[in-house]
Image 1 (cartoon, rainbow, N blue to C red):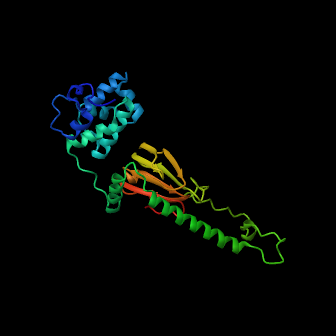
Image 2: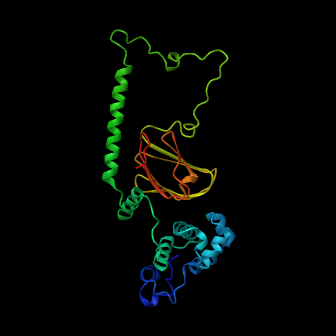
Amino acid sequence: MTVGKSSHRDNSRSSTGDTAADPGVQADVPSIGRTLAGAREAAGLTVDEVSAATRVRVPIVHSIEEDDFSRCGGDFYARGHIRAVARAVGADGDTLVAWYDAVHGTEPVQLAPVAALEAKRMRIGQGRPNWTAAMVVAIVAVILLIGFNLVNGKSTRAPSGSASAPLPSATSSAPAPPTGSAQPPAPASTAPIAAAPADKVTVKVVGEGGSSWVSAVDGDGKSLFQNNLDDGKDQTFTDPKQIKLVIGNAAAVHLYVNGKDLGPAGKDGQVVHLTYTPGDPQAG
């Protein structure tokens, strides 16, 4: 649904462009809330159905349709709720979010210096993947993998004249546990994605102790996930190049990257931007 297109056709411009950029020209244009409410009614949906589809609570949906965004919990969540509701009712979420920023004069979320720089790079390069950085990371990863395989191959090669002798297995070289002793359990930190392939990046996010908005993008800039992650729910993402994450409530998301337990993504209420590539997981 295009915001205000029918009511401004005679002025040769749509409300999604000039009106959103100029908050002063709003007298006869439906508000964000009324636009979403009208789209919902046109789609034949109730507020309860929209809430079930978006996981946005019913009172918050009512408040948004009344142009009261104070119950959203801040500008970051308000933008996410607007996009989610717009997607459910068939409205243009990006246009409505731009309209929200223009009308309400909100400031961007305060991020840590590294996260703020990454957010700026994402805005500058929106729609244009950073192929140079991705190529450098991929080349370094390939070189390290080839070097590791060469060193590992030399160390395991049988001496001359004994090629027919079988190599000892990994299980036979380990000392047997004492009789009656219990085997120690496998570490829980590697259990969720213990079989992660070495030539890919594998990221698993698990909701833990609360709910958080999570966005995941692959190495080609394709969106893999953009929604709330509730307590006990999980999502796993794999890509040959990299996985970029934006997490709205870092303390409520537990990270497992390339088979390793990295613990919570951050502090309670903290917004973090993280990038992971194949190999030893280090946030970029």
